[in-house]
Amino acid sequence: MTISNAIKFKNSYAKELHEICERCVPSGFNKSEIVLKNYILAKELGLSKKFVESKECLEIFSGVSIPESSQPIAQGYCGHQFGHFNPQLGDGRAILLGEINNQDIQLKGIGQTPFSRRGDGKSSLGPVLREYIVSEFMHSIKIPTTRALFAIKTNETVMRETEQFGGVLTRVAKSHIRIGTFEYARSKSNKTLKSLADYSINRHYPELNQTDNKYLSFFAAVCDRQALLISKWMSVGFIHGVMNTDNMTISGETIDYGPCAFMNEYNPKTVFSSIDHNGRYAYKNQPAILVWNLAKFAETLIPLVNEESEKSVKQLTEVLQLVMPSYEEYFYKEHFKKLGLEEKSNKNIRIVKDYLSILESNSIDLTSSFRDLSKILVNDKKIKESVFSNIHNFDQWYECWKQELNKNQNLNIAKKMDSINPCYIPRNHIIEEVLMAVMNNDLSELNKFIKILENPFKEISKYQEYTSTPLNSDSNYVTYCGT
Ligand code: AMP
Ligand code: MG
Image 1 (spheres, rainbow, N blue to C red):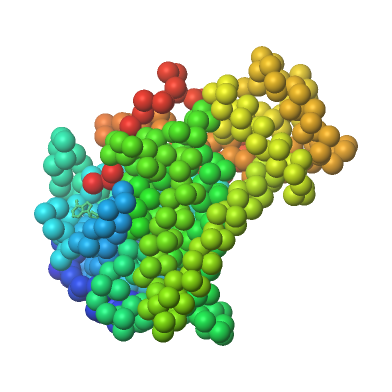
Image 2 (cartoon, helix red, strand yellow):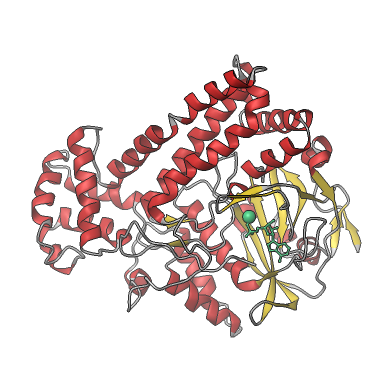
């Protein structure tokens, strides 16, 4: 282990919340290589290209060298997993190096920590690359998310169902504080809980320090950000796959890209995860699960909101009851934008509902539908080449939709639609192909795919194949937790 001075870390979490984290040291993987480097994000964090290219950078992010300013920790948390409380979670394979520019820098897959239980603390390379691809895509389409700075291939293999390449992801987040972190702090003491809440407010919602009941306002603010987040997931067909309370941040960023996937044909019942036997986290259930998780969050805040717990419960419940209506408001707002509609009206809500029901009853690809629609708007004849060709009730819907659009503005509306409806998404079958090439030591497909997803709104004819849906649909596609 060597000590480096190349990066300056702050360690506010390690210092202020030491009751709910454990100091630990990354195992370190000698002779690793960085497979993916996010130069843009590195620059935002103040890391120069020269540094990113250096041996020192590789050594820090493969855990071989520890920056002198870093106090590495594993964070403790609990979680409700598939509805059942698990008091024994925490960063079992991730270590937080500290903060740069108020953002957490975490190494995921870096070896055992005090929270590893029986796990090896490692990750295989496939899920690391998958998280890199999908989280960076989410950022490209402006959905709040943790980011990926580096993906590293270690010199070791990890044993899963088969022997696989090992990997480490450098994850960057506004913070890694989860609902599960509050569940953990509450299990320690009210004092610890209060410290975590104060820390979270100062870090993410400092403006709330001025409000009458800052803990209640904090709850409302988290509810609001999460409602917005889930509405955005729903608008692009994103299925998280494991919406446990330990996988939901209080910053409102998407976190933990395990068995997540985007659906192709619009079917609200879609589930991809191998472990989600009852479809608890199916696409259509995500808003209700959000409310369920926020109820668990509310429970942790009872001691802070009011000295009398009955009053606390009442106040928190009132806020919780607003989550579903607020989610719906956001959901329609997202869809009005996607369909080029300007104002909220019952008629426009009907248009969105009817649109989605046409997609559902005809098993139409969600992503392509919005792109094809803008093409038809500019040129009616395009319908023949579109996903709507021969869809019997489409014409009627189309006329109804056009009536609500700003007259003579078709070209502008189509352009606007294309600027927010992605043409390219990380479709499951393409990710699989790209990862397969990597396992055969070919990185070219991976680099190309990442480049395409950096600007997913701009259609480029030579990348036509990346818009294709899987040959035999992917309703049987299965995703696995990234372990
Ligand atoms: P996740 O599925 O990534 O949300 O992880 C759920 C819990 O299992 C977290 O507490 C992880 O830290 C832990 N975990 C997952 N994989 C491993 C592993 N290979 N070694 C130790 N802990 C792990
Ligand atoms: Mg997790």
